[in-house]
Image (cartoon, rainbow, N blue to C red; front, side, top):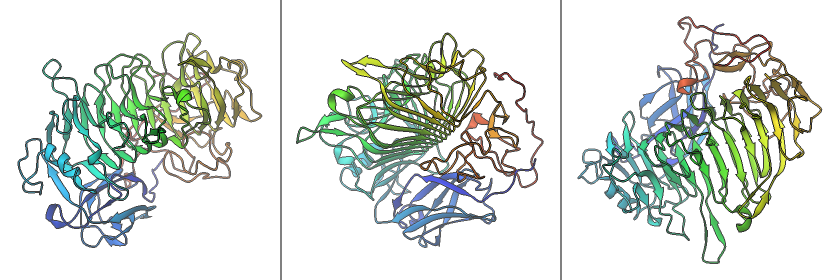
Length: 565
């Protein structure tokens, strides 16, 4: 099979505004965009912003491009154009603002030739909005912000930006800015970048954290309202965090004795791995305390040893008692891999009445510990659309999906509604149930594909069976590491329309045929990536080799029992 060339697709950018003058060579800010089909090298491809071509391209790969704005850029759309056509658009605003360069031991004023110290940059953000700081190569292992809290950079209220002029902490193109805890026993265990949680009434809002590397024994990033946490490489959680590598959410009485909660946060394209606390209350991402309007998309979570601790835990502590209702939470297009350390993957634990959580286009690989569910909920209105699970579930009465009620903080929680549509559940051979319904709740499930355990009706506990579904048919993935569909897959063209899910994991529009495909990927002719890099580096979408691909070995999944690897 030959990989077909395709037009580029943009997913997101780190910055959404910035100046086109100042900074290095007076050419403005560096911006990074992520997507697919950019080409392994630039060649004659271009990026324009507001119709003007950008100045230079210090980084270019098939999935990520970094460019510097330059004088021709204007407010408008970012568009990447290759020989295959123009991409979709991302909006960008050209504005005034200062650009700084930072090194661990800088002594200058922050220009490119004389970088400043991190503490001086934090001070700069306290007196201006829209500051953009590029952290150069080096190890950042001291306390540079509000000191005394065992955090490398603790931001106070004064460091907040404003709408359209965020204050940014960004890795310089092509270099590794490492935020690192010093070796155990030589200094306190530190987290990376967070806000001052003691300022109860005021948010540290409008912050961008992007392209930084974290090797921290505690958590990496604590986000507040209007934060963008984009494209970071995070290895943290050597000791108990009781939260997440990325965490967000607080509830504090404001001046009117109402509760302020964190909201409007984007967590996109981060790699989260290497947790070793072996404590089940640790997580990759932990939205807590009434977080609202949250997008968690295109992150890669893998190789975390947390004793079955769930990778994403939606846990609004004491939500019912404090009246915290969370809406607008969208968790989509993420890759979860618990192959090395079996663990729960998606958990909805404690939400206020009326809360809504949407999970869609996620790919979930690997099982969890005995008796658990890879995906579970005990509160809220939970919606699962077009997710693909592979080798999921656990033995000893374990399941792929688990729904139950429980008493926490003096309140009895139960899911308010449960909806499963267009999901592929490929169970491992040790799993007991597709769905475990502990309390005989109503479960609305239609157009799902259930495979690996035999008959769905026999192998689901108290589940309410929908009128449509595919029972115990092999979904026919391309291979054990590539979950695109073969042309003969029963999941192809077999789903139902879901108005809120308009693209698939690859960014292709849904549907590609008459009906939606079931699972995270739409089927297209030639969509099976011949020369896939594999899931280990987060690139399941393959590459366009321009006709010069090396030979690839594709192992088809066949037979009637699941393959376990």
